[in-house]
Structures are given as C-alpha cells and as structure tokens.
Amino acid sequence: MTLINKLKQLSSKIDGLVETRGIERVPPEHREITAYKDLVNLYLQVVGFWFSAAGGLSSMSSFILGPLLFGLDFISSLTIGLLGMWLGCLIAAYCAIMGPQSGCRQMVTARYLFGVHLVKFIALVSICGVLGWSVVNAVVGGEILSSISNEAIPLWVGILLISVVSYIVATLGIKQVLKVEMYFSIPVFITFFLMYIATGANYREALYAYKTPTTESTLGAKLSFFSLCYSITSTWGSITSDYYILFPERTRKRNIFMITLVCLAVSTTFVGVIGTMIASIAMTNENWGDEYEKFGMGGLLFKSFDKWNTGFAKFLVIILLLSLISNNIINTYSAAFGIQLASRRLSKVPRYIWAFVVNVIYLVIALVGRDHFSTILGNFLPMIGYWISIYFAILLVENVVFRRKFLHLYTKEFPNKEEISKLDHMIFLKHLKIRYNWEVWNDFDKLTYGIAAIVSFACSVGVVAASMSQTYWEGPIAKKLDGGDIAMWLSMGVSFIVYPPVRYWELKRFGK
Image (cartoon, rainbow, N blue to C red; front, side, top):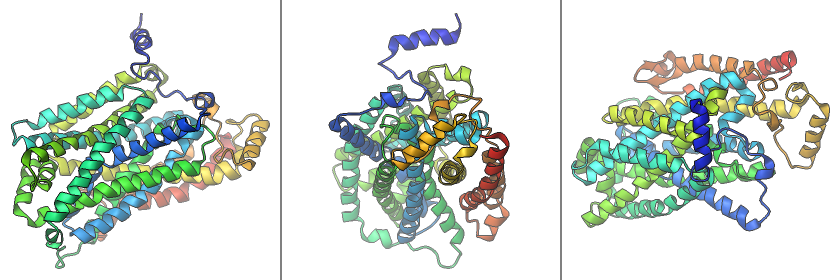
C-alpha cells in the first residue's frame, strides 16, 4: 500500500474533525442557502473574519516602520500609510469576487490566466508571501512574551506557541476557521480600543514632538513607505476568494467587493493609526525607544499600557497574541492549497499534511531570523506587492475585456457554442457577471496555456528590477528617486500594456 493510499484511509477516519477537501471545487449545489438567517450568519462570519485577519498586530507591524525605519513624523506616516493601504484594499476586494462564482480557491482560478503548469510558479510566490507574514507574526509573538516576562520567557517560546496553536486550528474546515476568526476578533478589537484610550490620554503631545528632518530629501522614504503599506492589504489578493467559496454562486460580486473593501479598510485603519501613534512616541520618548530596541514591537505594546496596573497591562498584551494566531491560521490554511497545485500527485496528499509542512518551514525561518524583524518585514512585504500588482492587472483585463468582448474566441474552454449563448443569457439576466467555464477547473486540455500571462509577467519583472529599492538591490530608476520604490506601479502599468495584444494573439492561435 502506497503512502498516499494510507493517508487517504487516515483522512476518511478523521473526516469531520479536520478538513479533507483540498483544491477541489465546491459545486454550486453544495453552496445553495435557502434560509435568510443562514446567509446573514455567513456574512457576519466573514465580517468577523476580516476584522480578525486584518485588524491585528500583523497590519500594525508595518505602520510602526513609518517613523522607526523610514524616519517620517506622525502626520506624514499616517497620511502616506493610510493612502497606500486603502489602495491595496481595492486590489484585494476585486480578487475576492472570484470566490462565490467559481467555488474555487484563488490560485485555482489563476489557472484560467496562467495555465495549469505556469500557475505553479505563481502559487510558489503566493506561498512565499504567506510564509513571510507567518514569520513576522511568530517573531512579534515571541517579542510580546519576552517583553511582558522581562525576558524570563525566551523569544523562541513565543514563536513556537504561535506556530503550534495556528496549525491546530488551520487543520479544521473552512466553516470552523471562519467561526474561530470571528470569535477572536471581539477581544482583540476591545483591547485595541483600550490602547487608544491609554495612549491618547497620556502621550497626546508626544505624537507631534518628532518632525521629519527638512535638511535631507525624504522622497525615497515616502515612496517606499507608501508601497509598503499598499502591500499590507493588496497581498490579501492572493487568497481572498478562498474564504468565499461557501457563498451561493449567484451572490452579487458587488456585495463581495464592498464587504471585503469596507472590512479590510476599516479594520486595518483602526490598528494602523494606533501603530503609527506608538511608533511616533518612541521617536522622542527615551523609555519607549529603549523598549523597542530591547523587545521590538512587544516592548512598544507593553509601554502603551504602562499607566495602568502592570498585571492588567500584561493581560491586555497577551490578548493581542490572538490576532497573531488569527493571521497565521489563515496563512497556514491557504498556503497548503498552493502546494497541492504543484502536481496531481501532490494534490492527493491531504491538506493538513501540507499545512504541517508549511508550519515547520516558517517556524524554522522565524527561529533563525528572529533578531532581524524590521529587515524581514521591510524587504519581503514589498516583494509580494510586486507580483500581486501584476496578477491584478492581468485579472482585470481578462475579466473586463476578454471575458466580455471576446468570449467567442475561447473555443477550447467552451467547445459548444450553446454554452456561450447560455452565459450571454445569464449576463442579460444579471445572474452572472464574469464568464468562465468553472467545470473545467481541473481539465488540463481545456485550460489556457498561459502564454500571455507569463509574457506579461516576464516583461513586468524586468521593470521591477529597474525600479525596486531593497537592501539587496536598488534599481537605476529607484536611485533617481532617492531610493524610492515604485516597482509595483510600473510593473502594473507594463502588464496593462503587454497583456491585451498577446492575449488576443493567444486566443486566436490556440482558442484558449
């Protein structure tokens, strides 16, 4: 008996306790919701999910770098950071609309753009993104426990704790994950609200004490921080539809777009503002600065409650650990699907096995790089922003132009002209807004070769190399902008230009 067969037998025994469904599509008939109460409950779970996922320390950790890494004052950091973050919300919200209509995970729908073979590379990039976030979350968790225990609890203990708890929940099904995330969001939201009260009341004047130096150009810092904050929310675009596959197929894409946009924007703004506040205070308050140097972000969190009883302050900081666990649950859950896309053989291995592999990988990276938090965050996050910008541009052109105006060219995906006529009729009835044949999600003969997408991606990568600004490489365009990183914007523009003509040629030549 092969190992895969043994794993299948084990999966059948524990089915119900853990989720055994992998990248397989959830058929429309399994997503029909007739009771209004059940539909409302599903929407509430998604709202709680996004507040838990985006309204936590993961999002806050990027905003603190405005003052502490880029040297920007409170007003500059807040304005630039929020504008970049809100723009990223639009990207993630648009990607989310693919979930209810397809019943497929985000990277599975990417097969219709990149093909079944080239999508493996895209899935790998997506995995690297969620792994990077997981590393950041684990390190911040370790810093928190080390700070409140005055180093009695080593940094590695917190990292291990975050990893183990996240894995346990991530093995559960999508329904359980949504519920856990919703419940976690409540105490975390209350704690952040208390942080506003404690910090705002005691350090109001300190927020504006530090001013951005006027003797040197800050254009590069502002551009790079804008791109960094854009990446906070835009990178959700690689997995957003994963959490809408239980919604009925006829769910209006406008509803999915708006609920994702509003929840992401509100929750991230809520923690982003307070993150910028405590970082700005640390720029002029020596005690806060010392805590950050010694314990990282965990030190700042503890200091934000320092006017209250020490025991109560520690309790509140521990509550915030739930937000890190929440974020890593999502990362572990979605990264496993990316591995299953690598081959049909790997897709047969149960998702919880790949979730375990993902957990081990980011645990090791977190333990090795735990003393380089700001470097890890400042470098990896924009890298993910590059690729998601390219993916968004390709997806937008495919949906708005080709799937609406040139559907007759998809002769492989729709071999029967009656299928296209049926879809045209559904468009007329406003039951369907994006025209895909989701039945062939795993049919290698009917899916695209992905030539246009990969050509666009390759051309965009060249622009990225010329305009990115990281510690390991600074492109010539970035140098002319004082080290400002504009790679994601130029790469998106290149994809908008390159993809349409190549995609038209591909459809005319191969019919898919």
